[in-house]
Length: 128
Image (cartoon, rainbow, N blue to C red):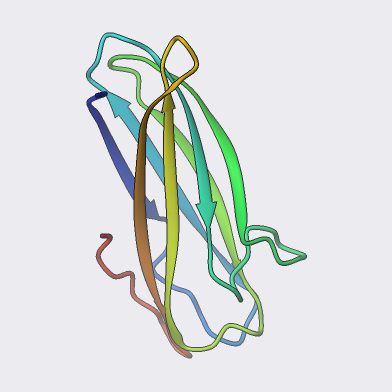
C-alpha cells in the first residue's frame, strides 16, 4: 500500500451566490515510497457548479503525472459558479488513483471539500 500525503486547498474563501464567479482547487500529492506511481484524479462537483466556464460539466479527469519520492506534484482546477448558484453548502469530491509500474491500480483514495455559499461572503469549511 503506497504511503502518500494529499492536500486540498482553495485559493479563495469566497463563493458568491447568484453571480458568475470561480474558485481554484489546488491538489498536492507526495509520496515517501521509493517506487514511482502514475497518478490520475477525478473531480466531481454538484449542480449548479461546473468544471467548465461555459457549460455544465460535473465530472472531469486530469492526469497528475509520475509521482516519485521527494518530488511532490500539484494540479490546479477551476470550479465555476453561475447565476443559478443558491446559498447552500456544496461538496466537491476528489478521487485519486495511483497506478504501480505494472499499470494496476495500487491505491484509490477519496477526499471531499465543502464550501458554504452565501449572498455575501462565503467561508471554506473543514475538509473531510
